[in-house]
Length: 468
Image 1: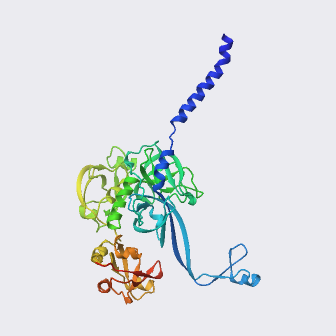
Image 2: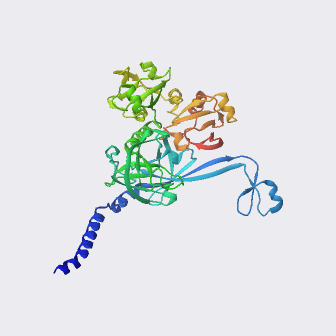
């Protein structure tokens, strides 16, 4: 009996090990149903940008590489030169997802930035031209709109409830492969990247590659908790570290883009730095926390509220500032004109100040406010250009589009923010008032020509006023 027990022991141990492995395998998540439910609302985004080439011939050898012009002597007309002048079209791919059944789509701003044409391919293979409602480069969020109804949508989750170690999955179009699915775990939360002070990124080990940008990140319930935005790489491909924008941040931005076409952030006018352990001790803090004001704009909101260099901002409206990286997000979440209650440490003592935040420097808000009364016509806000700006574009006249109402006449015609309108119905546009005057006389029963400059390239489009 003892010998039999000794013989059976290894087999029993092996069976126990296999049983444990099978139990562990059963505990791993199954994403099959999540993909079936979610994939119809994930889209592929293709953009085209037209670049104006410089003049001069280009000669190419048998391998297609550019060669100096004198090499044409050796190849003759076998490999003819191609003029550099003209328009070169560049394409790129990304991902996105539908957030409302009437055609609003979320993606990354860098996916559509500068694009002349944005095409959205749905899960059912329909291809629709998309309008960029607005984009916010500081959070890398863009909102698109396609003309369609009854589209499938994705449920939004709560990114604030995410925990490190939680399973997540991504659906996107890496390298143009539609609806590719990858999965992993949340590696960290509230990550601050050097160039993105306004986003508390979700770090994951989900495989993300070029083309995944703008696609959704899901929790196990199938709710969207983030937008895949960036990767850390030394090779151009996935290296185990990916970053997603929390959906709570993204939806807040999307709501503002949908309403106003832009995101207008609050600004304090301070230069801040982290509080190190030694600095904390020198200022009488029990530990390193808060945002130390190293300098401030003498004409900014912070100076007007009484803040000084050397103050440490400890809390904003009752929310503790754990690190200096938190402060831009807290202030940026407010709107110009809002009043913030700042708890600061000065000379070793806590005190409270009220600060009224202002517009971000260099924003076009004042210009938009001055020009927005044109919206009842074309649905755009415009501003006049100075002589230097016109000379740089080789123009004698023109007005710049600052904002486009997504439901307006201009949006239907394809006008986008940044366009310079030069001539409408063969009438030169020399000022905001001249635009209003021409618009007031436009016929509603036929299209009229509009000449504009986009990305340095002149272009004619047709515009038709609505019949009231």
